[in-house]
Image 1 (cartoon, one colour):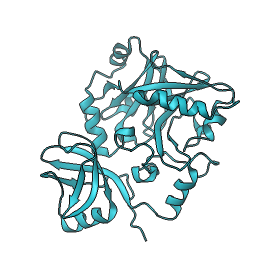
Image 2 (tube, rainbow, N blue to C red):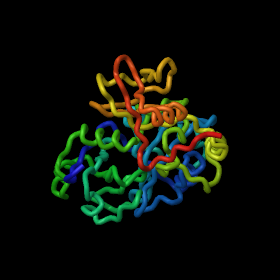
Image 3 (tube, helix red, strand yellow):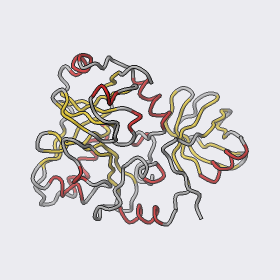
Image 4 (cartoon, rainbow, N blue to C red):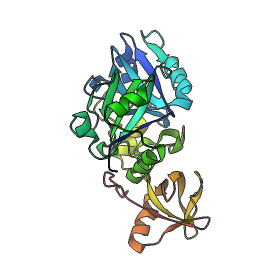
Length: 303
């Protein structure tokens, strides 16, 4: 990445969570510590099933007196419905604010400097009538702005972030190995730690109980992670999501999202280690794929 640009992410929606019980309500449901959210800090987190499987991932920031959840727009209604199920008598209001606000990715070298923020994940500040923050997962991907829809592009350009393309953002995301919600994590099947949530600051190990915590804790402390989502370099036609990836006659993994010669794949660690030792490539329908360990990731061999 070079010059700073902005990309309005039209596949993202905004759900506000407000009311006097808003924080306590979310705290008992999501994987991160909602008490840490403030005008100066945003978080990355997830909602799990009672069995500990992935349902939704999202960013949480503070705006005015409430919280805004930056989530997948096509699945916002499902997220709202699931949260409503657990609201019971809590004094909480859940409102879709996607018509009022948009999400923009700020990418390129020097985003933090341009925003006058340190390069620490999650640092936030008021910005253009909304909020901007360094991506809580990984500072290298840049920042995210949640700002009013009206005049958003002109406001970002005037703030020093000319218009970029979605392909630029996707290229950066895939290169760094960052999952993109349900495109990369299978709903009601994926396990957070297989998708980097520990290293990407999406789980707080010291907070109280939350829905699905037991599986996440057991997986973490017993070293039960046997496969990981990781970048792959693609030689040949890009395999469709869900395509099996083979190492010889053994299925070593499964393709997820991709663009051009880059992609993400869920790969069993035993086969990843074999590929690293032998220099072999994985294969899928005539395409060769070379897995890459991201600098931020910790791949631990299982006992």
